[in-house]
Image (tube, rainbow, N blue to C red; front, side, top):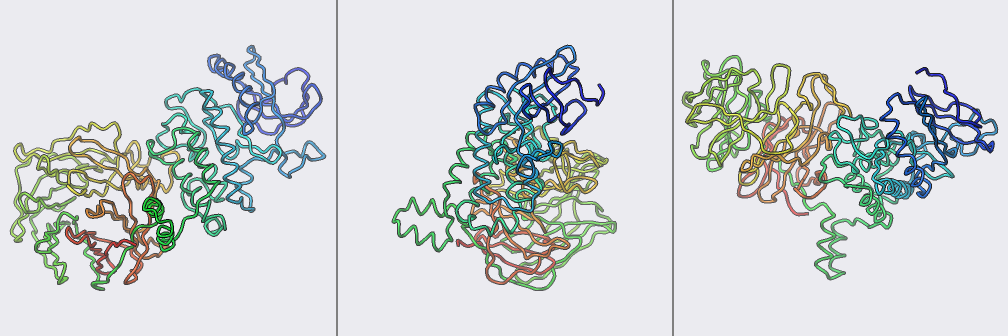
Length: 617
């Protein structure tokens, strides 16, 4: 098939070709009544595909003519001998706003032009257009149709109002491995049927509203946050877009009906009050229910910092987790290694004193160490071989435990303790130019690392250096971050993701592991929330929530800040306001601890030692 324009349908006159691809042409023509219109020609050498497109055209013409937010199809036809399908549409508005005197100067106005324009699109306009387009998508869904290529360049303007066009990808099903639209407009899982169109529409509205690229979601520029309509409409639109484009399938709108209804509520508006005004409003209303409703939409806590020591807590060989603190003696332990041997370090929290013992003949590569509550000693292992050691707390020589060596180059990762099986475990791994998601538990009786078979239908992406930490009862563990990609292969780029480092992507996703059922559950999607800085996290047993600690990156200095996240909240982590001693720019946090009784947090960082109390605001 050549790139020459194929013959037009009878009685049509070509004015100009607007756009051209390998198998399709969009042209400005005159119809049999000599009226300017748009004609699209599509070529297919696959009879089955051509037949599928033919069967859709009558339904598309009927629903598009009856729905204001869809580009109306005026007529269509097909030449099965040549494989050419043609469709006729009204001309969209010109980019200059009025039809040009010279038809050859005509360029159709699209939403992509509006997104790139220096003129800001007001919040209420974005909401109104979103309602119109959501209604159009809903009409397609009622017919059992999915658009599958929603993006700003496929939304035109007719009489100043947006209409969804380009029906070349419309289908009644999502075929496996089918390419969906453009990167960034569809979720990495490409799952959810009708929800795929809602995701794409949400990202499209985000670009229109913010003026930013879709890959920058959910960042909002200052002009949006300072707009007068933010307090009543903008924050609601932001939450609607977050839910529409939620990477977690179970949290996103399943179809356009719910998204459209939410946008209608956003148009009505609701004021988000400050906490002080909210309390006053709740007292004035005199209703506990009203007070609870208001409070749920406000920041609930604040982080009160206390600078305990300005002395740098910076030990390059420090390898420790929240489980390696004995809170009876308030002693924190670490077992680490380098080419010189093994180092056993202890740090007394209250006196800020530390000491260490060196074992030159000990293991030289240690991926993790953890505290076993039933034996009250430290257990660690050697990477590659998987040899397990017991470290007595008195600082005596580490004792090897019976272990049949694995000699696996990828045997490295994050450790955990399984209180059900009373075993130590290890999740993830990196080696042989790949990142893995293997999970092992050590059986002392057999002296073996046994790979755990997962029963979950969903598993985290392959990753290396993920952060693991326990929930309240240690029967639930959380995994955050790491670097990898869907296949685990080094250097492989993943369509739609960003911040590729040349080897792997920083995933920044968040998962829960149920040790009783051996089941993983996604809590935050890949790169859905990409915080800066130290990137530490811990489960707070008193709040029954997770706290994320963020801070500075090179070129972006910012003070340490905690973000509160509660499971089931259907929201991204919320930054808590800082009080007390102002934390300095925080670049590296070596340990994040939570006292079991008081719930106070310990931040052991290069910039000093801090305690942080999370208080109700």
